[in-house]
Length: 410
Image (tube, rainbow, N blue to C red; front, top):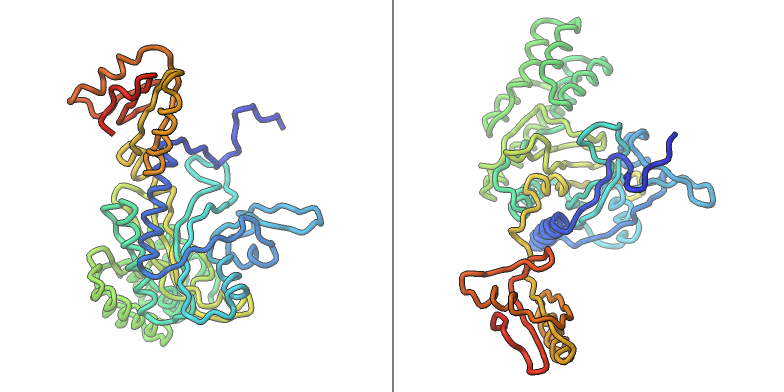
């Protein structure tokens, strides 16, 4: 294997330059502030966890986990999501805290990938977990908060698709009793949104034509509240019908939140983690082919850490939102340039400190040369900014032995 070149990075990781970092931090601050407004408190967990606890519970396949050994030979993993680490904390450090618990986070997570274009091994997520509430009200809360968070992040056009794992499990067990392998093949097609492959799989199964039509009918179950009524007619399985009734309750709560314009029911939704047990959802932005948010209910996960409790939550794909919005200069901070000669140094640096105390970004520069050209830029009323040494400034102050001169009136 050849040695990496000095500027090379591992596959799937990237550098974020100042413009992108500013935008990423802006998204992070806006979204966390939104979540705080809904009563969610921020939590930070370690980047590394034990493989035998969080790694196993994460539901990320072994092939996608970054594993490493510590100096005692114990296997560790880089966290592949935030749900399992938070479940560990809720079951240990927060064990005495009453339910429900509302927790938020912003973190980088890691998943090993094949060397494919466009796939990231490290990316950022901002999300919430609502632990200790099994109600439809809790599921609706996280969906409504996901919508509010996308808006806070600056995503204007998007749609949230919600489904229920219980409906698909119940319907398929009813139609294909005991045929676990066939069920999993069909679910895999739905997870990959491969509806052509799903129909092909149905044709290859040895089933009655009526059963084939029933299972193919799932693909038409996408829309508004009327989908719930259609789904209830499609199955007599108790588990499937209970799941649909729960989904109907969620819809009613979302209607009270006034957010149904952003939501559609999609009963082909299955969720990409095996720990989902109920409602699942994904959000797609109008200008991006990948989901920008996903989440759902996972009522069995906390039992693996010794504190059984229902839970629901979601994660915003912060890195994808950054790609969607771009790293334009729309939110670029204002900067002031303070230049001075030797005689004006003391006054200039005192003024710079005063401005920084006011929250203004200030760059200082010593120059014994005349700054008339810069002063001329700032004294022109048509100019609201200028560039000096590749950096854009909105204000200029210059100091010499006679005090401040020129400038923009700060």
